[in-house]
Image (spheres, rainbow, N blue to C red):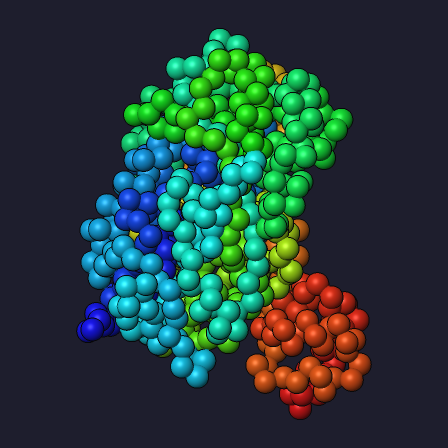
Length: 625
């Protein structure tokens, strides 16, 4: 029987957050792209929490936007509450987080894909990779159709051999009852890909009408909303916001959980996959944090046109009757009606150390990979990888240099470097503590750090790039002006300092010196700065941060200079580590497995010691002679 055969430049497998970014990047760069999805209705599905951003994840979304991705623009169109987290702390850990209208987020992203030139959406399951002599040639679907391509991006998320579990209920489905993808793993294994089995989980969804909000603490959004995308007009996101609600578990909740741990698939051995350490189930929290007599529970709306609420903080895989008792024990939820049970989901993913920093498989040319399939967790981590994988798949086809971001440039660089060099035995979650240079990698300056790369890749327009250059000019000129503008000990100045509980002046001072005082900032000094030009809010923010934290920023820039010296020491692709006699056996094994691109990357591999790096440096000096 004849079967369909088609040709494309790029095949993207999966249309979750990674797949959307990968497909859009390829199509926008002019390549004929097809994206496969189990269900067109699940494009950009938010299968778990109804929000984008959060601590460190907000940084990733800003960086995705700076490079020309879509996630930031899409959440700006579909959010229902927005909040800048950690505002009481320094700017390095400020992170934007927005509650999404789940269905609107998915619908909006689908519309973007449907209206993008060079992009075809296909509802079908890919079951097989066509690989010839280590080079990807195409894919086959379960219907028998063949799609030849020059490159492919795997973005399967949590769908490969997915199994949803709660209590003794085990269903071989993807999230939200969607069909699992049950064939592709066999093809990957047949092509020498090492697979892992991970798990994640999600809490129950409950009916808003059955919640007593009078017993809970109302959580509001920011009075002044900051958009995620640098392209979004700030005035367009000043909307009436929905509220979230805070309550807590209690000792009765914990007792219900403890009495039923033997019925939990997590502890009975029914679940085999490794779960995320930094997003534990409520039963995990009760077991591991015995000193805590309560845990936070956030009730978050799933959208404006639904009564479903997400019970944040109470992810679980306990049996249905235990869930019923557990949720009903929480203050304000005594009469709650559960719409969807909580469950854990197991799925197949890869050992990401099989990937290069470009996210291309080392052993299969033309095959790239992004998202939770790479052993990470979270929508934002997925989208970041999908964007980079899509860009690099396109660059390979076009014969251009790859995009590789290092740890000193971006959280995306930290994320990918960690995945491809460090052993990942659980779903990887981005955190600000993972970034050594986080004072430089702030969410507020993502455009200044990365917009130029987006422009070089072809995803940022000439107009956007010129706007960036103008912003850089304004920041530089204003910092210079403030450093060289002096005020005396006049009554106006002294009155302002008194109001701000700041030490009065004995003599003249530059505005910059005053800004560096902890209790003062660029905005407060406006009334004594008669020459101040009218500048956009984002420019003023950069001026304030760069002046106030100047000493710390300079110190970290010196650290980056040292880091760069290691990163530019390239390691030849054909190096034979086994021939370097003084290297320890473990170091040889790890270096042969990962094949680092440079000394810096080699130094971050678990099992490679500083002594091994010294031996390698000496060898490379001799190698080059």
